Image (tube, rainbow, N blue to C red; front, side, top):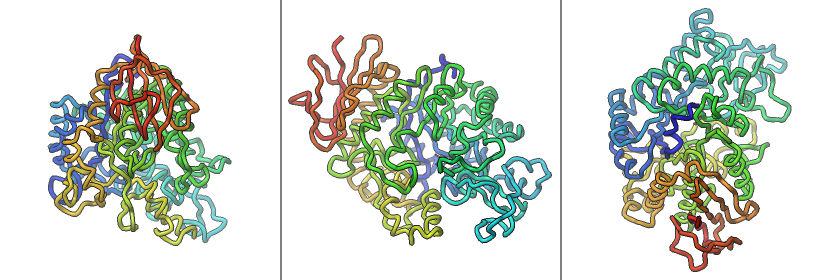
Length: 564
Ligand code: NOJ
């Protein structure tokens, strides 16, 4: 990290999920001209950076995280000329562009993989992680040929074994995610160089950085041993923070973004606070990481995705407090949701009667913490989870893979048995089309949308909220602006207040004598806080000024400036 180049610390990042943002040509799929049409919306919101989910050429088994060509734009989205217009349009408005880059795996349709499977002795033969497999002990149980079992017990993050037998090459290949996403072999210097070349291709075009997909998984453990005894058999968990990760990240920085004024954002599942400090501290190769600790509060370890555990505010506070106070010279992105998580108001707030209040309360949390806030498209409207009724309404490989695996294992009979958990957890909740207006397809498309539009678009939409000073959108706009003019919110010290309160989340942010206090009520009833609140100035809040400052109304949020 270069501490002098810190524009990204002061930034608010807005995540654009291109497939669902705006469709300009009526094919039901969002596209780049659609995003261009909405640039003034983004400028008006006041965000500083757009993180664009993958727009590369891809068969889309995992919504673009299966890249077929890193140097081309997916046809449905447009072409390079249009992408360049997007970059210029953003830059003209003072907004930077961060591209999503996928260094851990490619599509199985990438030319590297095609060559690797057909010509093991050729140039690309060692680009992926191929193994002959072990002599099978139980032939009926093997996904490969009768006499070869997968090389280890790792499971794919999306369900099923992390190894697929390739009949052409006569070997297993590793895929920590979908079978169409083979993992690259980073021990091969040619792979690394190939990836760096492709990253530089975009940097040369003038982008402002990368969000690096699962970048802490690129180094695999020596010998690919069976999973640890703690019961977690996903390959993902086995590959976090592998033995050569430091070396690869340093090399990547040196070869690519380190040469530009570009931010490097690591998406880092299972990362610990210590590892985050290490990677983003003064000598670290990354500028910030996205950790996952708060994303696991509503599931239990054993059943993971399939379990819903009632989450607890004191636990959330403990996680936030630890990361807020413990990162030292390191830095992280702050997020509550993204395209891999359910909608934040449905998960951490109330998507019924207190939707507006809880969505604005969560906005206050997101935009007043230390770190770089990430707003996922639609959260600024208070968009909610989708009421999925049928399997056909889903598109996410992760959700479908898990359902199929559970059916195959006899744990469930079909979608009906999974409906409740799918509604709660599927990533498709955050991928439904952006809601621009109250018309049939929410102004997203004139065609058939690729994923259904949430029926609540009749009330939750940009057009309606733009005209309402009390809307979630208006509140986001106000807070984004306030953050921009309040350095204490960006880099001020964080100090927890009332850590054991089960309803109120309170903290102070302090910088050079500027002292701020954030009060958030996570409850749908009133909460009284035991604090002296004399002589404070209210900077923002999601209710009118209170009669009694110590009483927080349902999901109330207030930001105060304290007297010197
Ligand atoms: C993380 C991405 O955010 C997610 O959408 C994707 O499925 C996996 N990485 C695999 O690339």
